[in-house]
Image: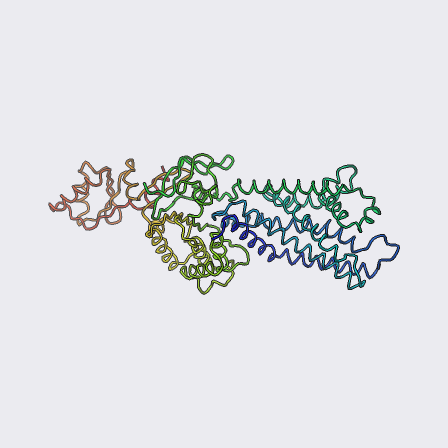
Length: 262
Length: 307
């Protein structure tokens, strides 16, 4: 019959992944990914990289459109999907009355959101790389870099998803708060002076990316970006992501999730 | 009730400044119990507390001695058919019941086989592979019952289970619910349609404005309402003469003519009936028809809610 916690994780994961991937948002994101790939193709054809370029256009696309834009966007929508949709339509009741620990349901739902967001992020990454190879005949994203970049994608998705899941449970209108974080906090703070950029996921993810893929250091030098040490970046992501995870589990397990009916 | 499965002790529940339930206490054992009350009485709050979906602000809820909110083991005994109409998006009836069974530890083909059997038992065999969001209201009620029964629970919570069903479907559902109670399950059914509850069970919990007004069997509850005289309607051969004779009885508090007969109000119905029988035997009164007018659920409910 299996362990109750295992059942909760597995079924929470299955139901959430199914819900995420079957939603209309997924088709929109696939279209968005295809649009990014098309945009990159146009850019490569119009401005093919030359010797004078310090870095390859694909790397800019990966840094800006994948790490800086797609990753928070996908994590945001799938986390909200996993933790808000069934509360709003009332179907969460069917999970909460089952003999499984609530923490296991939370873990399963978060995992489902993470896999959905991660899979689409990977799809966009691979799409951009394939487009580069088709247009230019080669790509700077060497096979050795793939696992590192996809690993980074997973860490980034996990951090964002843990934070947005906790926010989804904390606020009545979580979309506003999450959108503020994804597109105001994460977009403007990295350009601020002093230590403020270090308070963003995207800045710390870039620090890890540069550490894992030294080939990209040129981008950083060109842009005069001061990134934290990889160990500090890893610590920041682990602490913030971990704290968000613990807060989310605590909220999910102790709060009442039923709407007041009368 | 010594074999009580659910124990609700001095439970109050409030949302901000709104009190949904106030000092509610009762126990439930095997059989069907109807939960009645007008809109806003606190029925849904009480059902959610019993299902472990809410925590009481004060007091305790125990299911088999355990707190259903905090204990996964306690929740293993619960099957709930909520009032809501929704199901997880994109799932067929069969997939939905199978997923719910997996959460109870059923696996693979065993889960699918049991889900198929349950869906057939509620009359949805032909629709099992259709998406549940496309089901009619009546079909949704059946699917909700199937998933509630999936793991063979001891305690069933059915929130307005007859909503949206056609008359044959209602009759079938009422029979099904009565059979579940007869099997020894503890079934708590909420409804605002009194005659439907009456058809399922004589045992009731009456709620109004968050308070438990009464608990027990309709007739017993009525007997306890001493401030309200019982009403008996009689049709006699010579109504005026019979009314005059009966009015003389000390048990009769009031008498008025109504619907080709007359209505007698008495606080001692047993004594009145003895006197009536004696007079009928002596030929003083020729009773053609006798009917208690306020021992039905509607009358009891109206009295309690008015009070």
